[in-house]
Image (tube, rainbow, N blue to C red):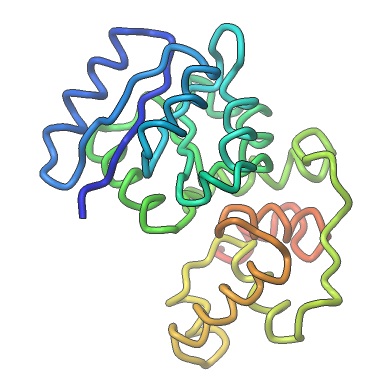
Length: 228
């Protein structure tokens, strides 16, 4: 299947470079370009994109507001947002994750990294593997600076095993590693992840990571300790 990509960035030169890169891949196509958040929202609805590459800092409606609008629209349930930013240590990036973005990537990333990121979020996975990303999320959520304005998730709705899996997801572990740690199959882990997402109202794996920190199930430093 071809991944339909929408480019949202206020710099025309960057959009052009992204278009050339994306359309060089046989499994991707660019279905629209937006110069600000409002245009990105409108095009997400009309172009039926699969992935929106969203710049955070744009004039008018910024990328954060656009991300929230897209991910909260039931008619756009199949659209995922990948945030692109010049400032990887920016609290707005964490707020974007809380608003429903499936991950973020620095604009200094290699072309192959960007293409891999598009495929990752299009497949329904969160782009949260780098340790710096996890520690950034932990720091801002622990300080309350990046958490969305909503009550902490109620984990009582989860089974003991689902809470265990959520803790591992929050620490940044992929399904294969979680399966090894818990002594179950990757398919079993995937089932627990899907059920946990449904119970917590999480759109994707990225929001599960946020929920794990918001609820206090995972604390700052847990991710680095897991991989130490």
